Image (cartoon, rainbow, N blue to C red; front, side, top):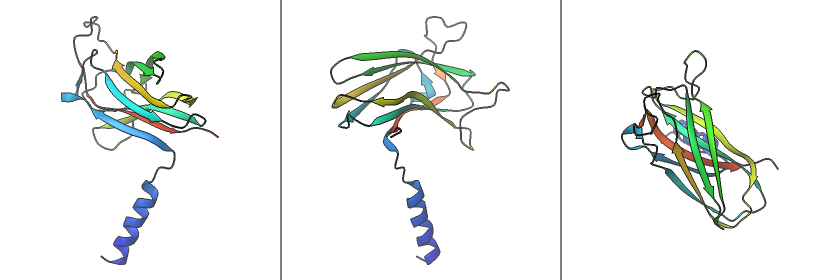
Length: 161
């Protein structure tokens, strides 16, 4: 290898490290069709009961996504069994129909705030379940899958000190 290649690899490794990241995982949506009764599940083991964290839901979508927003129902279960359920709405496009997510290809990635500056006060496994609740006018019962969502992720970062 020449010096330029070594410098490039070293710089890439240095800048690709994310010191704020505590947890980051994605789950692929089968056939890019997300049914409302199919939850995306994550288990996060926690040992830090003092520091604040920011929790994000990451959504990757392609041009087949037909709505300007997305509705999600999230359930966070503490190690003790206590549960917090939230209904969330996020904008996916601006008022002109342009995707808000980042990315240069047909896939756009959206980093959506879920919980800000929270303390996971219990040691153990936290369970996160994410359901989609986006409905078209003709699908009140939620039997038609949400198309164009390729991946759903959960990311936890260090909060403010």
